[in-house]
Length: 134
Image 1 (cartoon, rainbow, N blue to C red):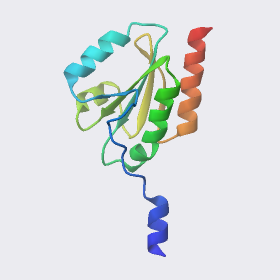
Image 2: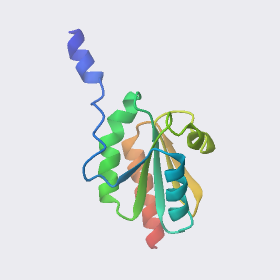
Image 3: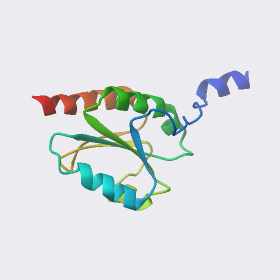
């Protein structure tokens, strides 16, 4: 019976970073600075940052949904930042739990979702993308 429950509550393995995902995995401060500089000043472009960690079960659980959203919402830019690799960037955005999703427009945070709350994240992404086109 123990194995039944462990299979129910064990998150799926982290998806491979390869493939056709539109999520930009950022592994260095220099890359982050370059990407941030390229996108922050566009007032109509939604930026969604997934602050996660490789050891975080909920992060691995929501990763496929995050990649799916990145594929469906072409009007947004999706970044993935490992808090252990880029702890200074995580500190700058006041990340205290994983996963944390920060939504940004025009260089300013417009919303945040803390936890693997797929429906809430998708609703907010949809809302802020829709507000760009109106």
